[in-house]
Amino acid sequence: MPDGLVVEAASLAKSYGSLKALDEVSFEVRPGEIFGFIGADGAGKTTAFRIIGGVLAPGGGEVRVLGQTPREARPRVGYLTQPFSLYQDLSVDENLNYAGGLREVAPADYSTRRERYFKLFDLIRFTTRLAGRLSGGMKQKLALTSALIADPALLLLDEPTTGVDPVTRRDFWDALTSLATGGMSIIVATPYLDEAERCHRVALMERGKIYDIDTPARFRSKMGLTRLEIEVEPLSKAEGVLAQSPEAEDVQRFGDRLDVMAANPDAAEADLRQRASANGLCVKEIRRSQPTLENAFVGQLRQMRGAQPTPHFPNPSPPLNRHDVVIGAKDLNRRFGSFQAVKNFQLEIRNGEIYGLLGANGAGKTTSIKIMCGLIEPTSGSVTLLGKSKGLRSPEVRSRIGYMSQKFTLYDDLTIGENLDFYARLYGVDERVREERKKWVLATAELSNEAGMLTESLPGGWKQRVAFGAAVMHEPEAIFLDEPTSGVDPLARRAMWRMINEFADRGAGILVVTHYLEEAEQCNQLGFMVAGEIIAHGSPSEVKANMKGTLSEIETGQPELALTTLKRKFGASRVSLFGDKLHLVTENDAQEKEAAAELESAGVRVIAWNPARFSLEDVFISLIESRREAIPL
Image (cartoon, rainbow, N blue to C red; front, side, top):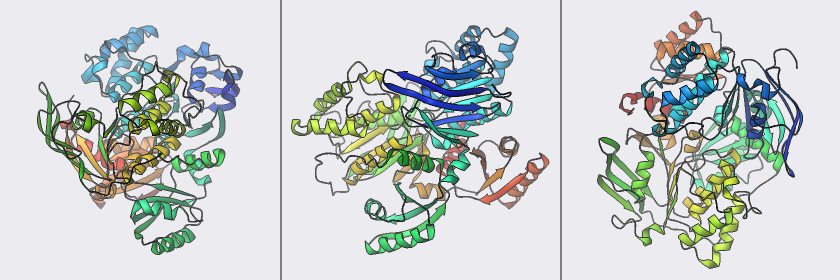
C-alpha cells in the first residue's frame, strides 16, 4: 500500500448469489480527506462500508485500511451505521459510557473526549435524558459521538443525516470539516447531493461499479451545461411545452419555476421564449446559474441508464376544477401536559396546491399533521378537512385522505404485494382497477418483478417509494406526506415529485413535511415552523426575497479556516459552508469590509468574493437561529 493512504481498495468485489453488489471497484482515501460515495439505492455503498469496517468479508480483490486488513484495523475505525445504534432506554451519558467501555478507552482519555464532543455537538444539556426521548438530530449527534469516543483515524458514516433538519445537518458537517482539518479521514455516503458538495472528492456508484471519482467542482464542470431558472405561468402547462425544446437537455419543475439545463444558453433562451409565446405562457424572468452536483449526478445516471419515463397513474378520475380549502387549520393548539407542541397554528391548502411545512426536529410538524388528519384531538382551535369540520374520523372522510407517516407504514413480515393488497382493501380501491394500480406502484418503485419479496429486505429508499404508492393508490383528494423522500436517491426523488405534481394537477391538496430544502423548492407555498408556530410563510421566491441583509459567496483555498474565522466574528447564523465556498450574510458594506479584514488577518487568501442569491437553506438557518431561544430543550 502506498505511503500515506488511509484506504486502498483494488478490484474489490462482493456478490450475493447472482447479484453483484460490488463489481471490481477501486478507490483510495487520503489522510484528512472527506470522501463521498454517491449513488442510487442499491448501488453498493453500504456493502462497501461493511467491508471497509471489517464486518463483511470481501468476495474478491484487495482492501487495506490503515495499512492493515479491515478486521485488524477495526480498533482504529469509527462506524456510524444507517439504523440508530443506540440503546433507547439508556441515557445520553450511559450510551457514551457503554461505547467507551466497549472500545476500551482509558478513563482520562474518555473524560477529555466526552467534554470535547458534548460541547461540539451541544449535548452537554442532555446528558441525563434517555436516548429514546431525543430528537432524530440529537440521536445522530450522540451516535456520532459514540463512534468518535475511541478517537478513530478513519470514520465511516452511512447516510448520517437522513431525517435530520438543515440546522443540525449544518452543525454536523461543520463538525466533520473540523475533524478532517485535524487529520481524521472520513468516508460518507449520502443521498443528499448538497451535502456531497462538501466532500473533497466523491465517487459515483451505480449497480456495484464506480464510474467516476472527482471533486464536486469538476463533476459540475464536466457537464458543459448552464442552468436556466425560468419563472413562467402556468407551470403545469409550461413543463410539457418547454421540455419539447431541442435546446433543453433536462427540465425540472419546482414550486414557482422550471429549471432547464442547456449546452447553448443563448439559443436555449431564445427558443424557450418563442415556444412560451406561441403557447400562451407568461415568462416573468429567466436567470442563468451554474449546475448543481445533483444536476451532474442525474445527467450521468441518465446517460448510463437511458430514458426512464415515470408511469402515469392508471385510470385516474376526472380533474377537480374547484378551488376549495382542502386542508385548513385555525388557531390550532395542542398541549401534552405543560408542553405546548402546537401554538396558534394557521393553514389553508386549496385544490391543486402543494404546501411545504419546514422546521427543526421537534418543531411540532408531525403533531400538526396528526391533528389535521384526525388522529389526535387539538387542545383548542379548529380543523377543516375536505369541507368538513366535524366527523374527521368518519369512513367517508378517511377514504378521501392519503397519509404517509414519518415512520415506515409497511408491514415488514408481509411481502410487497401483500402490503399493497392490504392498503388497497383498507382504502376501498375498486377491484376493477386494483391490480393495475398495484402494478403502477411496483413500476414506479422499480420493483415490477418483486411483488413476492419480503418488505423487510428492502433498503430504506425503496421502502419509502412503496409506502408512497400505498398511500395514494385510492387517489385521495387530501394528501399528507411526512418526509416522503427521506433516504431516497435523487433520481427516485424526482420520480416521486413528478407523481406528487400529477396528483396536484388533478386537484389534490397536498401537505409535505421535508428536511431537504432542494425538495422544498418544489412546493407552491412554504411555512417555517419554530416551537410549535408558523413564523414565516410564502412562495419559495417570496421567502427568499424577504431575507434581510446581503449574501456574499466567498471562494478561498482555506474554507475551513475561513469558516472558523467568520463564525467567531459574526456567529453561526451568518456563515455557512456550501461545498468549496462560504455564504456570509452581512447587514451593510461596513460589515462586509470587517469580514474581509478578519480573513486577511487570519491569513486566508480570498480567490473570489461575489454577491449571491439567498437559498432556502440560508432562509431556514436565519429564521431558526433568530428564534433559537424559543426552541425547547
